[in-house]
Each structure stands twice: as C-alpha cells, then as structure tokens.
Image (tube, rainbow, N blue to C red; front, side):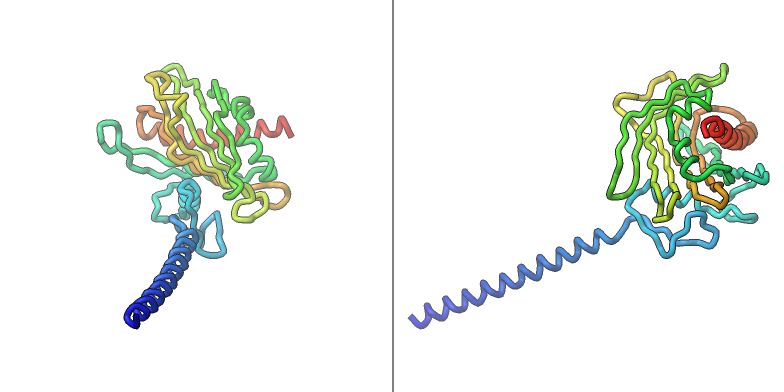
Amino acid sequence: IETNLYSQEEDNYSDDEEEEREEKSIEKNSQNESNKKEEKKYKIIPKPNDVITFNENFSTDDEDEYDAIQLLNEDRSEGNENGWVLCINKDDKKIYYKVVKLQDEKGNDVDSLIFYADATIDFPSKTLNKYVNDFNFRKEFDGMYKQAKILSEKNDEENHVKIIEGYYYMKMPFMFTDRDFVTRKKIWENYNNKNDCFLINIKSIEHPDYPVKDKPVRAEFRNRSAYICPLNDGQCKLYLASFFDMKINVGFSMMKSKGSEGQEKWIDKVVENIKKHE
C-alpha cells in the first residue's frame, strides 16, 4: 500500500511538471511568432541623398515597395558609383540613364537602359497623382495606347496600398509589330505618413485571360517606379524611374537618345493635358 501511494504521488508530481513545461513552451513559441512578425524581410538603410527619407532604418515585407525605394533612392550625383549619366539638364527637369546587363532568349548578355526623371511640376501632388493613375487620361494624352483596361482593383487597407492590374495594347510605328503588356500597379497614398506623398510601382505580371501571343509582342515592365511629393506654391516633385524592355532590336545609341527624349516628352504631355482639365 505504501508503495502504491508513493507511486501515485510521484505520478501526480510528474504531471504538474509536464503541464508547466508545456505552458512555458507555448509561451516561448508565441513570443517567437511575435518576433517573426516584427522582423521584415527587406531592410532600407537611409543615405544622405535619398529622395524618399525615413527617420530610422526601414523594413518591409513587400518586395515591390522595396524595389521602388531602392531604385528611386539611388545616388545620381556627379561622380556617383551607380552608373547614372545626366543626359538632359533643364531648369524644370533632369533626365538620367544608366546601362545594365540583361540576357536575351539565347542567354547572351545584352545592354539595356534604365531612365530616371527628376522634374518639378506646376500642379499639386494630389492632382498629378490623380491623372497619372487614370486609365482614360492615359489613352487621351498618349496616342500610342490603343487599349487600356482595368482587370482588377482592390484596396489593401492593412498596408495602405491600392493595387490595380491592367492590360495595355500599344500601336507601334509602321516598322515595328504592336506591343502589349499586363501590369500590376501599386499606389501608396500619404506614403511614410507624409501628407500628399505618393509612391507608385509598376511591374509586369502574367494573367490567364491575357496569355502571351506571337502578335502583339509582349513587352515587359521590370520596374517602373515613381515618387510624387508636394513643394511650395502648389508645385510638386516627380521622381520617375523606368526600367522596361519593349523587345525592340535597335542600335544602342538610338535606344539611349529615343529613350531619354521619351521620358521628357511623357512628362510634357502629362502636364499639357492636365492643363486642359484643371
């Protein structure tokens, strides 16, 4: 009897120990999960010449947001190490380009270009953001767009971002086959808790209703990003970085000159057509 009583007490004590260990394990796992939520995948370290500024180190789980910030914040000052070259220098705008290496369908290295526009616009930032994200307005001022169609649109309230998927069809000059592309656009309003500041990122995506065909040729938006922020006297700043592949086989010098001119003309067309509405 004594032995049985002793064994029963020992078993009860072991159960209590086990329960305590389980509680500690649950608490530890809960803490680990909480820490994982706080740890973001992509980290941004502020630099002196950033156009998008943060008070401290910034992190995000959104790869598109990260890519937009990284590209827009690249140093373009004279003698920069990022390869940016100033090619158009005017009072209200500056256009830069830099050469990057891509691989063609056969795996060969080919030169491509990224363009960057730094412009002062004579409209408030909210007005500019409104029009550059309007599909109908885009068709109005850009005659190359034969079709611009919204495929889906939603608001991600948790991350304060609007997401628009769209299809575009471009009428090309007679010597080229027409182009089309499907994109996902993300728009962050009042970005980084700054009133009337907007971060925009556009990338190509696949869509089951719009598969790749032989014609039109599917162009690719690798990273087109913009940051719009207010200035004094009703003006705003537009920082626009464009990295896309139109799948056009032309000489490098022509690609550079036409590309930089295209950035400038795009901005001028936007401003000219906003004036018709405002």
